[in-house]
Image (cartoon, rainbow, N blue to C red):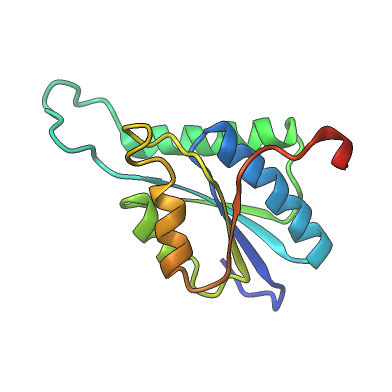
Length: 148
C-alpha cells in the first residue's frame, strides 16, 4: 500500500459477526480521523489435514471469499472509497501483528471463528493487544442502533 501521508486504520476480519461489527466501527473511526481503512483476512493450512484428499481446496481462496463477503455485509455493497484489502498468509495473530507496523490503530472483534469455545475464544485479539505495533481497539459487541 502506498503511503499517502494519511493515517491508516487496520482491521482484521474472519467472517464472524464480531469481526464485521469491528469493520463497521473501524470505518466510522477512519472517516472521523480522515484515515484510510485497510481490511485484512489471514489464512493458513490447518494441522492434520490430508491435502491429497482434496487437491482443489485452497485456504487462500476461502480467505479471499471471506474478506469479500465481510466487506459486502458490513457496507451493504457500498464500501468506502479509500478501503484497501489484503489476504495474508500465516496464523492470524502473528500476521496481524506484523501488518500493524505503520498503522495508527488495529481494530478487531472480540469473538472470532476460533476453535474450542472458551479455550481459544479471543486468543487472537488478546495476543494482538499485547504485541501489536500500534494501539488496538477490541469491539466487544454491536453498537446499539440508537447510538447512531
